[in-house]
Length: 471
Image (cartoon, rainbow, N blue to C red; front, side, top):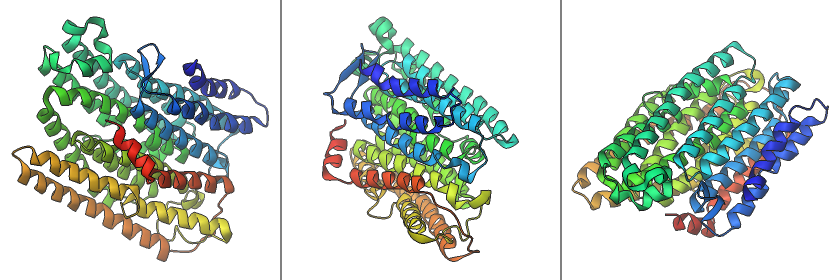
């Protein structure tokens, strides 16, 4: 019953998207808003909750991630109401976007709630393929080219994940049989796995596949390229929802790897994420437009989430995840107004807004830009504080205290480069360039209000306590 309720909005959205009624956009928006209702119901149920036998199981971790993703989806829906005011999009393309958004949402539900590696992979593949067509909603040669590029990179990444799953399954099959696909059983029998080396190989290969899908080293630019070529709501879906489905898989796999050989896991993720942040920090420094800037910044934050998670900073990782999931889509959706008439100009982008709507938009975007670089009281300020603290705490239990302190200092230098770039861009947006009048719409402000309120809720003591309770 619960699974039917979760899938119903997406199924209705898919069916209604074929209608050519002139009011179809209103119905699609209403249906899209309804995705939140069954997820709130699921969030309140006692955990763990079996949605579909042992194949789909809701626990505190994945329901939190699904709730965050649904809020992002509603923010994107508000932005879609005025998409045609900022870019050229036909009624048919608009309906097709929702059609594939429905498929995307079904894949997302299966991947996030999966307690089976095979179902997780199928859900992730479904979400990946549907986004290819959402990119092509923008009928331009660049968008079509990047959609094909995404298909190729996505195929490489998802193939690596599949090969990793096969190796992990093979490592545990002697003791679990056909049940070796279950995340929960793998976690509870991790110390009994007869072939830990085979598992670690599978984990490393699957992790590289997931990292590639999030734009980590060595494929740092493909994500920025497709988000630049597609409409800004697609970029918001990538940063706030698709990456959620990827990172939850990393969380699941790494929980098992921690029990098999924590030092190997930590060293692998530590080196990979620091290398990614090192490259991305200088790419951010050279970014010339908002979409690339926000996209590359998203890669940096996902790398920090992975690093905090394996450092034992579960609370820091989940707080950072929530903050990123709300902040980055908010900034992507703001580009529809910031890049007035398709002109990618940073200088003067925060000038030219008139009236109460303009003042509110200017305030929200300024708030998000300063929050994304972890200035207090941004949730990211606290998550990074706790995350780096967890790294030091992990080092105290090993013989590498000095090495960890050096690594943390190196990370802080890289983050300072990113901080400097964002502050310089903010100053240019506010004080430089020509002042061109830009139009802000009510639905766009509603989307930014939702993200602002969600960020404030993250800082409530009850929210903090809930995130700490997730182990």
